[in-house]
Image 1 (tube, rainbow over the protein chains, first blue to last red):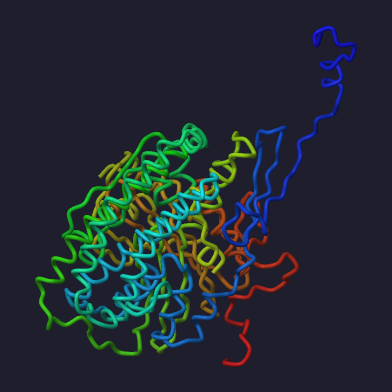
Image 2 (image 1 turned 60 degrees about the vertical axis):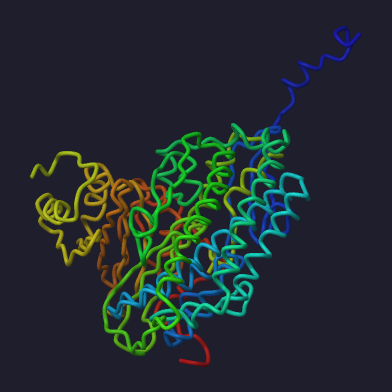
Length: 381
Length: 156
C-alpha cells in the first residue's frame, strides 16, 4: 500500500532544496510570434516572475526617418507592423497634416475610416489565428486565415497590395475607390458577419479553449491604467476608453458605434473584446461606405501639400487594432523631420507581461501572452 | 478654483488655470481642443506629475520622448485622462552638460520602458528609475545612437 511506503516521501520533499528555476522561452520558440524572449521564473509549475526581452529587431526606424523627405517615410510606416500597416500610415500622414495645418477632403476621411476598419478586422483575424494555434486548434487557425483572405482581397481592390498597402498620402489618399469596391466590401462584410459566428462557436464550445482562458491572468482596472496598457487588454479590464469615440480624429465623431467594455479582466475578456470589436468594425464600414457613395464619383480625395513643414512640434494619436499609437513630430522647416517618435501600443503592453503571467501555470503562458497580439516590427522599431 | 481639490474630468480651461495656480513655474504654452501644452522646469517635473496624476486624475502616461536639440536636450511627456480624453503635453528642457531628470515611473509604471528607451538612445539619466538598463540595443553599446552627433553612414 502506498501509505505504508517505506520511503518517507514527505520528509524527503521537505529536505530537498526546491529552488526556483529560470526558463528562457524564445527567441525561437513556438509561442513567441516573432523574435522576442520571455524569461519566466517557475516554482514547480507556477510562474513566479517573468521578464520580457525585446530588441532583436531594433533597426533605428526613428533615426532612419531623419534622413528622408516626408513622402518617403510613408512606405516605411507601412513596415512598422505588417498587420496594421494602414493605421500606421494613416497616423503618420495625420501627424504631418496637423503640422502643416491643412484639412483633408471629406472623401479621403471616409475612405481612411473604411481602410482602417478593414485593417482592424484583418489584424484581429490574424490574432485569432495565432490564438488558435497557441491553444492547439488548427481549425480556428485555418478558418480565421480564410476569412482574413477576403479582407486582404479588399485591400488589393483598394490599392493593389495585400499587406504593406502604401495607401494614405499626406493630404488624402493615393487613389479613389475602384469600381465596384463598395459593392464588394458590403458583400464581404455581410458574409463575414455570419462566418465569424462559426469561428466564435468553435472557440466558445470548446472546453479546452474556455478553461485555458477563463479566470486566468486577472488584471485590475488600476493595474492596467498604471501600467499603460491600451487597446483590448485595457477594455477587457473595465477601462471605458476608446480614442475613436473619446478623442475622435477624422470623421469618427460622425459614426455611430459602440465600444465593448468588460469588467472581468481575465484572458477570456480580452478575447471577447476583440471579437465584439470585429462586429463593430463591420458596422462602421457599412456606415462609412454609404458616406463615400453619397459623395459621388467626382469628389476630391487628395489635396496638394507643400514639401516643407513649418518648424514646431506636433503629435497625433489614433486607435490602432492593438491599442493607442501616437506619433510625435519635431519639424525644423526643412523637408525632412528633425525627430519622429512612434509610441507603439505593443511596446507598453509587452512590458506588462510580468503582471499578466505571474500566478499562472507554465503551460498557460502561451495562452496568456497570445492576448497581447504580439508584433515585433512596431515594438522594436 | 481650488488647486488642492480632486477633479475627475477637468476641462482644458480648468487645467490651464489650475496648473500655473498650483505651480507658478509651469508655463502653459498653448491650448487646443482636448490638448494642453505646458513647459515645466526640470526640478519640478515629479511634483507636477504627481499632482496631475492624483488631483487631475490623469491615469495614463502615453509616452516619454527624448529630443536632441544639440544645444540642449528635452523630454516630452504625454498624459491622458480616461474620462474625457484630454491630453497634457509636458516638455522639460535639460542642459546638455547635466543630463539628469527625475523618473516618473513611481507614478506611472507605464513610463518604465519609455524611460529606459530614452536613456539608452539619448543618454538622459532618469533618477530613481528602478531599472535603468539597455532595452533595445545590445548591452555592449557605449554610445547613444539617436543623438544628432551620431551620424548615419552614407547619406549625411
